[in-house]
Amino acid sequence: MRSLPLLTVVFALAASVGGNKAPDGTEIACDLPADLHRRNSTSRGQGCCVWTSIHHAALWQNVPAYLEAPKWIQQHGVPGGAWSGSVEKYLPQMARERGYAEPPAFLNYEGNDPSILRLACQTGRMPSVTYCFSPTGRYGGGRIAHMVNLVHADNKWFAVLDNNYPGANQIEWMTPQEFKRTWTEMGGGWAVILLQPAPPPVPHN
Image (cartoon, rainbow, N blue to C red; front, side):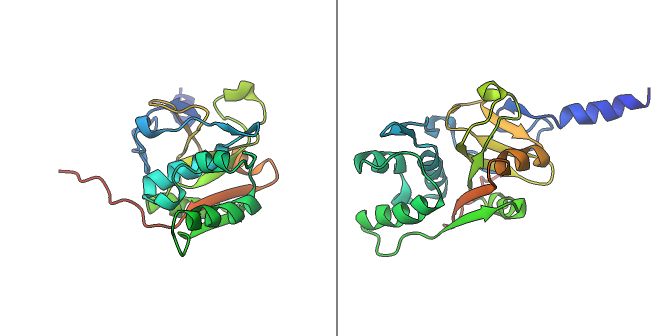
């Protein structure tokens, strides 16, 4: 009989798909409205998940220089697939073409330290992060070379907005351990974090 509470805790911390609250009621840190979610697209036959994730972050953090990043990539005939070097190259080019003398700052992080991601989310920033499998069984449980947005990160929950699964009630909640595996297990973790100050918190009465 004493094992039942333990089983309940384990079940509560299992990965799940839902809305803007974790299974235990924790409120999401970066609640981008569902009507602003952008579905992944392609450029020259390659997916634009990196650029779509950056677009989401630019929307949330009000960084116009990087809005519509997938469309800019498509218009310039650049293949959609991206890595850290292409972000270093094309984001500044994108900003300068749009009239910014100094491209808005961003962190292009490669490593496996999730504390950086926790700090970003806790200050209202929305990291774009690598993702190599779905803890809830999307993609048939197989491996995928993909980038998504991290919309919540604390000591109990991590949550992602997957641009292949946009819309309300599509946030994937997982434990920190599950997130670290999907972030790092395909050659190490990569994150792009726009450094523009985050939006002010929603007022509460």
